[in-house]
Structures are given as C-alpha cells and as structure tokens.
Amino acid sequence: MREKVEQALNKVRPALRADGGDVELVDVGADGVVKVRLKGACGGCPMSQLTLKMGIERVLRKEVPEVVSVEAV
Image (cartoon, rainbow, N blue to C red; front, side, top):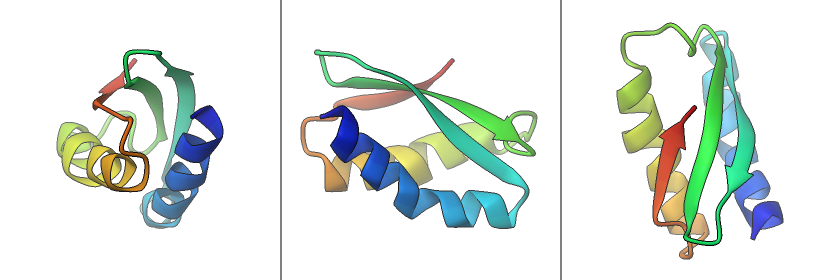
C-alpha cells in the first residue's frame, strides 16, 4: 500500500511545489492512517490543514481506497 500512496502523492506534489511547498510520506499504518510531513511553504502556512484534508487526503482516498485518513506529523 505504501507504493500506491507514494504514487498518489506524486499527483499532488506539482500543485504543492508551485506554491513553494512539498509533502513527505512518513508512515502508512496497517489501520489505513497515512502520516505525512508538509515541507517548505506548506509547513507554516495557515491553510495547511485545508490543504491536508481537502487536497492531499481527498486525492489519497480516491486513489487508494484503503486509506482511512491523513494526518500531519
């Protein structure tokens, strides 16, 4: 499942990089919880929670149905 999550993140990265940020995959739990670290401009952005839930989590859940949620660490 980790490889599928990484492939899905690659679809999100261009949009994040366009704004000076990026996302790093930290862990994929057996329970379907994906842990990521927002980097660059995304790390301190006040909109990062919105990016995480409405952007990254939405794409991951669509691409990898086993994903239950995405959390920032």
